[in-house]
Length: 245
Image (cartoon, rainbow, N blue to C red; front, side, top):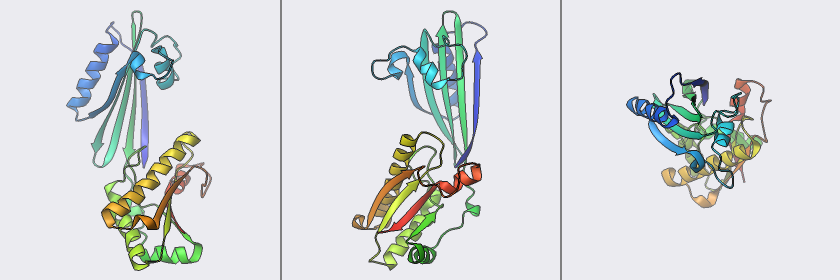
């Protein structure tokens, strides 16, 4: 899934508390049909021994040149909305430093996959690739942004996987998730593990494939097909792979 990132930072011209500013954002988002996914304030946003609010500002508003913007208070909100099958995410952090209040807003507008450009790989084509190379790369399984939730448009590809297994009762598969190079290694590995496991669960629960015939693992960004140097190439590396066991 592709997307657009917008970031805005500004100081509130008249002094208003970070709580008041955050409540205004929350009301605005709800009025525009956003679901509030998570909120926190000050030390409740942090774990471990680090309890100072300004640390949250350093983590989220990392390019802010004023290190004290979140010194007295820091409040965070994450909201999401579905816009014609393409989720939009809004993250807001507000902070106080004496008489100054700062707001930083990050908006991620995702773009649903252009499914007419993704060729459906049929069960017959999957079997041919498996006979030839022992594996097949699939791009028709789509997930929610930064999650392991399988999107509805993935159903045709999942149905073809179930079909090839039904037609070949001796076939056992390993489902492998792959990501591009955006993000940290450990995070991408964990995400790809969860996504591969979601595919296995869906094949079992929705299509009746026996769990004994399926295993899953994530490869993260470790096995790119092409260099991760363009958006087009990154899209080629984001895939689900079926490997014959």
